[in-house]
Length: 88
Image 1 (cartoon, helix red, strand yellow):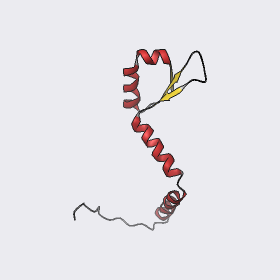
Image 2 (cartoon, one colour):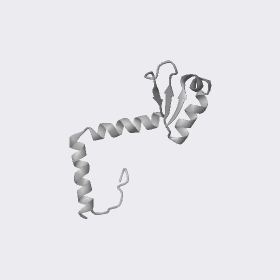
Image 3 (tube, rainbow, N blue to C red):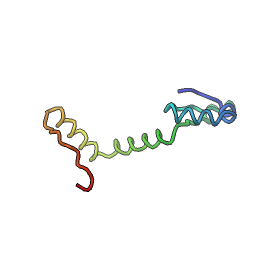
Image 4 (cartoon, helix red, strand yellow):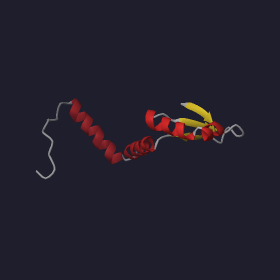
């Protein structure tokens, strides 16, 4: 993760925003005066994805269904079918 000071971020905000959105990178924004006063900049798309992953992983019922599905795939207890088209 790249680190950049608050003042450098402020001067180059547009390019840093483009970087985190185009490259799916995160950026650590630091404060020279207070090392504990830091933040992470990431794209909204990556943030939404991370939150959704945390939501899924914190749901025991859903995680159990995912585990059972993986076990069925490993055991060969699945079958392939054509996708159902809407309005069919």
